[in-house]
Length: 306
Image 1 (cartoon, helix red, strand yellow):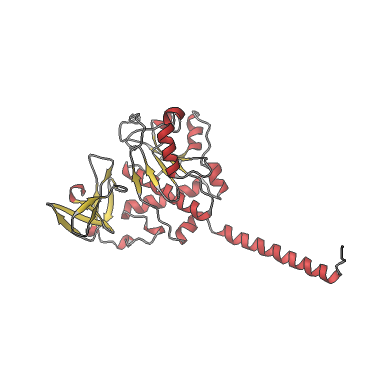
Image 2: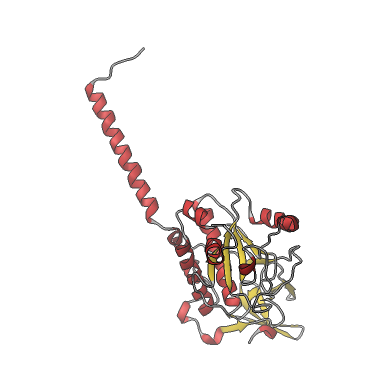
């Protein structure tokens, strides 16, 4: 049975609807006010360490300028709604001969997995780009926090590789999206990560800002402290306690962990970038080798210090 509402009730309901609408608009405005990069900084989000695993790709070819001489980094996006970095690594290691595609690394909100030496090219962006660039795939995430963590990891990987290979940070030149590569060389029609970034309220300009922040701080201080509250103190760090590391026989510098009995064991899931500066606070001797501490229970042999 239908009942008739009196005018007072109708007016009250109308007022409630208007106020609710104003509240929704107000809350929506507040959420949009904080950019993804500001969210990263405000929440002190730090990138995870790069894991180095040898994948199955067996096409070892140098870049057009030679082995170990990339010209920059191409940023891809996987276009797979739910796949993680682990999923993508397993898929590409299994299927690359069939799909004729491979990249150097996969990144999500939890991991950075490097599966092919960046000294050599891969098949990810067309013949010209393959002979010029390191290539990294960003996995899709769908919450604000997960996305922020994933682009933090992605930007860190890009900045780390630029520094490792002595490249400048130049958006559109040494840091390019697959979409930019498609426009530059006309060999692919991919537009990633533009569409995915847009769906998360993000764009390549903001990503380049994040890369530049990490690049600057890694180059000066060996850390991304501005977004994560590093133990480094920026310009107040004593230069006497800063060392530069390099592995002339490899693409990264191995690190060691000290066991409870004072012996050292190799850390297998992370390493230091070549030609980067690190603050050190302790020195230990073991089996005739001097080790310097560069992070909590992470030590580098003096043979890699230059």
